[in-house]
Image (cartoon, rainbow, N blue to C red; front, side, top):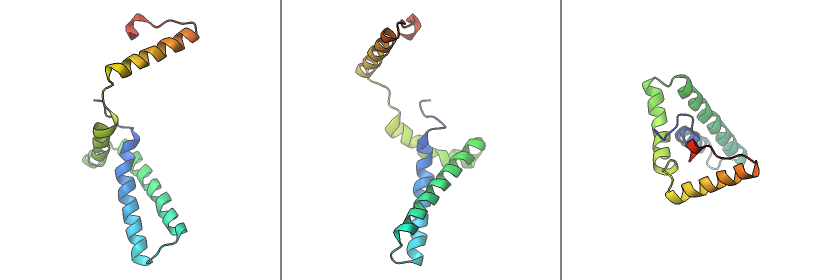
Length: 112
């Protein structure tokens, strides 16, 4: 599986959901919330997202944690985890060879 449990993409769904809820709550209280209140909602949303992420790490075997991670896995699958092209692999190999040359080492044959 190319998708990873600890990827930051798992922060996105809780971040968006908590931010939308916070903004909706602000707008229900004040027609035009102050920049300070809007900033407080943004910071609180980040905190909520990090706590949800941490909870899913601690309770990864539960159905709730799997459901909370699903949007992150989808983001990884659609956007972030494509297989490299042959040209990208060649650039990576050339970069590794140059680093090893500069350090006076050689690439092990297994890494080819």
